[in-house]
Image 1 (cartoon, rainbow, N blue to C red):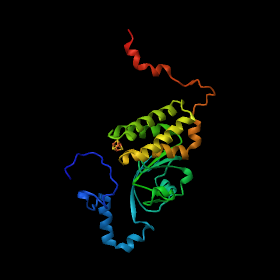
Image 2 (cartoon, rainbow, N blue to C red):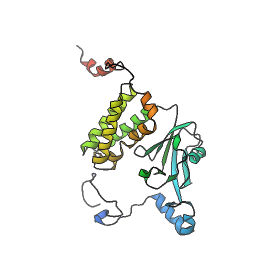
Image 3 (cartoon, rainbow, N blue to C red):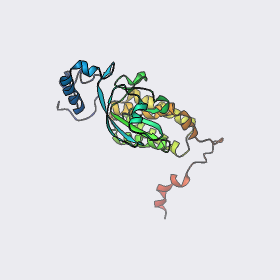
Image 4 (cartoon, helix red, strand yellow):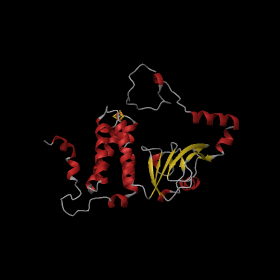
Length: 253
Ligand code: SF4
């Protein structure tokens, strides 16, 4: 709209502060307009009577995964994770991904946390953008992370190195865990690269791409420790030589 190239830019302001033509700009979606219509109809007092302080009203949440009743739910802000899991009849939930791959992952130890629009970093309430993926014990957590990292690697536009190289490296490290070849230093590498991506990437995609692997390693520590290479020697018994040279087989005389 401003006639510039369609590419991510470094921005230090949200659109409501400086958006289109450096002016305060409101960007609303259908859900916001629907809520505005309800507020006009019901009045602000009735709207604020729903939800919790700081997060009044309701929220649409798309629930998918290992539950008997996946679908779109309208909940009051403040509902607990456990109540939402009951509502969708989750089957033996183990790992929950909130707000997509760049959001927050939860273990069942956090089932009493409330869903709200409050700050993610405070870690009290869960800030939910509208998506809730439920995974049970039968799912391979590392495969879930691999899927997310493939998404970020594909979506990275490649302009800045922390995101372009970082997502590639994260994927390689998670693949290493998947093959049983990772050691504790590899988990530290993921943390180290993730912190660099969070600090130095140019836009939100790179800044948030490492959120889930880092949180998952923190919240599912035993699980990740169980996936490490336990070999006592430097010899990596899990190294798959055939797979490593597969690309060269085609050049055989
Ligand atoms: S963070 Fe990733 S998507 Fe964003 S500008 Fe940098 S390379 Fe592109």
